[in-house]
Length: 68
Image 1 (tube, rainbow, N blue to C red):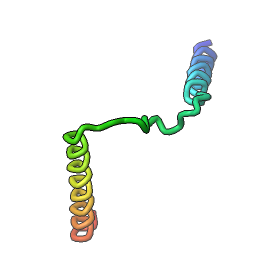
Image 2: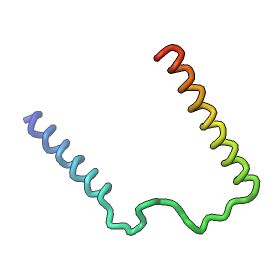
Image 3: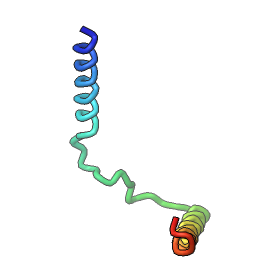
């Protein structure tokens, strides 16, 4: 009996998850194209991008040195 309840519960949540994740929305990107950033926000995003590029280069260099 417990096993049957478990199977039904798991099936219910699986179907619920599939129903939620397969929405019929036309907006596939989730990005607002008409978004206006302030110059401060733009500079912050540019800075973060440069930091990420630097981190990638550091990780690649460390991998080449120690092959971790």
